[in-house]
Image (cartoon, rainbow, N blue to C red; front, top):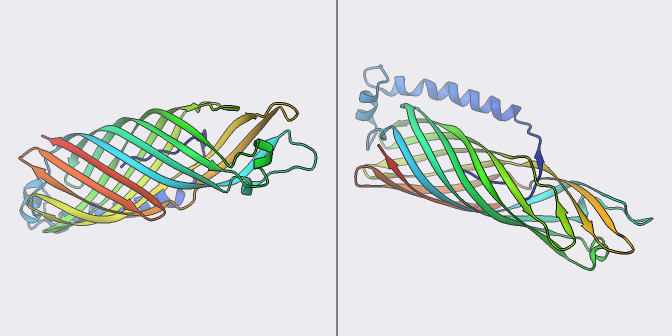
Length: 289
């Protein structure tokens, strides 16, 4: 699963608790195949016998579409120069709503029965709507919000850890992507294009497998923390005002429900919906061989 931030420029990541969680889960999952296999060998043949539908074919090439809508909050804001007696803070931009559409190609490989590695490359197109407080709006000609359009290439990769027995399975996916994003300047508003935008997504899931596919429920964690810089050209008498805003996800977690269906011997269809403080739809088709 891939998800991209809106119109932001740089990111500082605080991932130590997440790394500890991933390491702990990895230690648990590494032991699962050998304990579940009847012979104790943990081989693919053993696992095929105890997992409904068998193991997937090792290689996959897929095309996926993602739509996502999520809210961000401004945690710090600076603007200079301002008229005497005027100051701004995070409350000057009370809400940032991001909308993105993404199409990507995903290559994956089941290197081991419990380990899948993947790479993705795609294109994102979206916009972010930033609301302005009544105190700030008069400085900007009475505007109540401004919109930033953006698009660009997305690339990255990750891994999935998996364990299963009979009909029941669990997975944990970590995905890290970079975005080469172009920001579209508006009337009186300009930005500096970022060198790269980074996104970390974690998705734990549990599900039920049947001969022709599977269904699952789970969580979706998206880490986003960045600093946006730009300038407003307000004309006389204020002139140019430079701003810098620190922004992060208002709520990084949401829920997901999804499923896949096997077409013929090599084609899989997948669909997943996310709900909560972030809404999203993911759909794709994969050829396995």
